[in-house]
Length: 252
Image 1 (cartoon, rainbow, N blue to C red):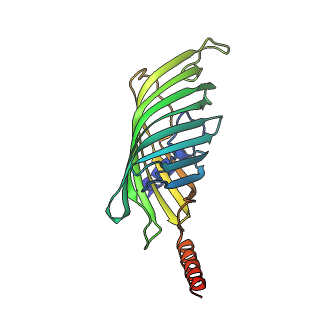
Image 2: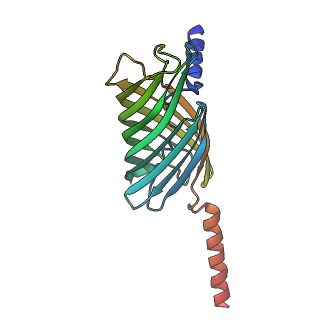
Image 3: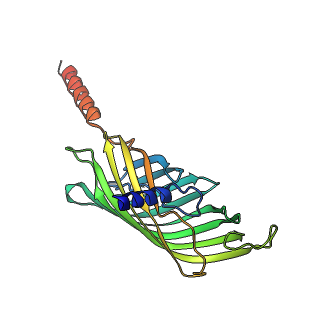
């Protein structure tokens, strides 16, 4: 019991850390299934951040996606991606995206005090898989795995070690391997669904390995998912009823 409490405390503390260079991005896993399929997702996360994703089926096989997140201490992250999708049996969908992201983070250390801050770029590929809503159920569930090269340019203002009050300060240009799994559940109506997402991050540095790259391991997000162009059961019934009335008037 005590071990479970300690584990829970560690998880909560890790996702509640808002002041950090990088954190798991709560990017929507849209599971685009057809041409002109538009999905909009927006919400908040525990890190904390506010975020939004727009995904669109450009053709019968190609989808595009844009994402933005704004966090604490002027932190931000934006990405754009394009990829392929395929709908399989039982409303299962597989997607493969490739894209580019960029952001800014600031890690503050109370002990010195000191700061480590700067910008980074991410070149990534992401594989998504899941099951979308059907006639019998509006529940959607799935997961994704993102991996890529994280290139960062950070300024060490007395974070790793005390230098001086005014500088000059050391800068670190690093390349790292990023691995970011994520999962989601969406439930609700046909056009509007409530979404829950859980993401994790692991970063392995290739350069300056003696200096730790500060980041959050977990992030939990809550939001709303919208499909504005989908035809609901109510819309279909309304059009059918109107069609019958028009046919009856013509017959008269």
